[in-house]
Structure formats: C-alpha cells, structure tokens
View 1 (tube, rainbow, N blue to C red):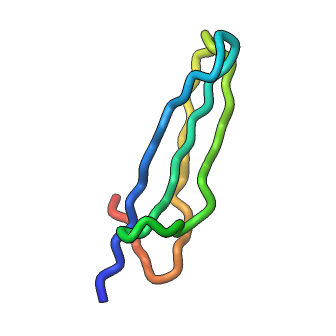
View 2 (view 1 turned 90 degrees about the vertical axis):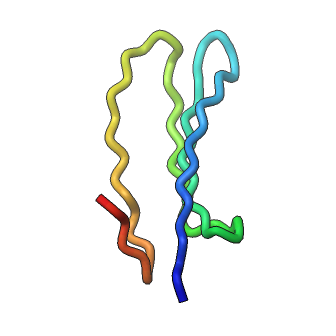
Length: 63
C-alpha cells in the first residue's frame, strides 16, 4: 500500500503585531500524520528558518 503524505503550509496574519506560520503533515485521507509545526513571529521581523521533515513511520520523504 502506498502512503502519501501531504505537507501544507499556511501563513496567517492575526493582527498588526504578529503572524503565525503553520506546517501540517497529513495523509491523503486528511488524517494527521504528525504534529504540526507552528511558529509565531512579530510582523516586520526578518525570518529565515529551516524546518526539518519529521520521521514518520513507513514514509521516506523526497529530497
């Protein structure tokens, strides 16, 4: 059986002061494959981040 993991990223600006970046790891059926990565940044900050792929049993990420 082929396991498909979908990685979705969203940027939500909640106010003039800060924004939230969320990365979700989902199976193709919509179920969560791993806890989401969530980070909050002040608006106007220069942000340079690297998010490492989580280890998910039975799944090898593409490089």
